[in-house]
Length: 434
Image 1: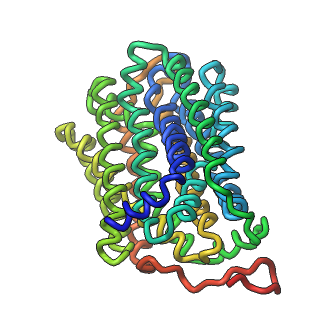
Image 2: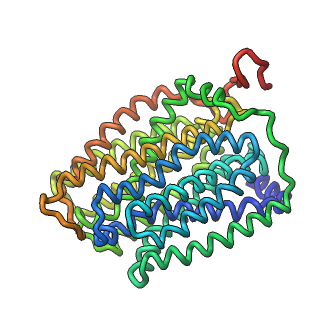
């Protein structure tokens, strides 16, 4: 760790780029967590159904998901700084539009624009952390990225809920939008401090993506990572707060505290996992197997709590276990990079990230439809307590996906921090990059 702080001191000027970008990423995580999950009841009162609210979540996350591959290609080619210069502007436009939109169509339009912009931030951080501070410190910086991002997610739960209890949620977002603009200006200033690298010789092409898609290990890691991260994120971003209110009879404030606490648990473990992985010889597989197993066992426990009407504090324990399981994301991300060519490290991360958020977006829509099957035929809007049977059905779907994930995870490779010796073709029948 002493070497890490020494390297950080020697590269402190580079923090003018890294820190504002890190905080912008945290705000993007706030929007993923707080909208619509924290204001679920307020949106119901405005006349939206669970399916419509799921669509609001999906509008952001689906665009965020499919944009990962494009953002990865651009970051590998032009650097993360150049990519987020455009992406940050789109994020500002989308997030500042949202408070002034009242129809489902316009809310989704603003979320789509914000999702495009937000999709550039994580991958730009990944690329810049590797470029600015070196691979030997990368697992620690990746842990920091997740940690600070999850702080944004935590603020999107209880702190946002408390602010919404005293102020209209739209006014809160207007103030946050002003902070976002300030951070973006600081980031633009930071670009002048650090000389940007020349664009890579790697062309903008789908051949690198095809090389990832032909790698069976890439799909294996993508699936297992998506189920783990997706289960936690769906609970955190969309249905978790409402779940606790309906099934545990918790108040809005208490449910938000739980969401914040599990976010704290996850982000703390993500930070520590970067250190733990380095301490155990950069092994990734034990963390991945443990995460997938815990996700499955937690879902079994949650179903039993609801079915047998066990004490509802077990629901809180289950939510925390989902957070612990999701902390395995760090190991999945590192493995996703290392089973592919080093030349496309950001693209490989984007491909895996795409799967994770696609699972969240599709899951939010699917589970919203499942819950709405339990709405009364004469439902005309307003807050509604969904029955326990609806949530058991939701957990049953998650259980099937997580069971498959456990089996697949045992076939994953152990990279120990080293890239596979893969060489990337620029295009068919041309020379290879060394």
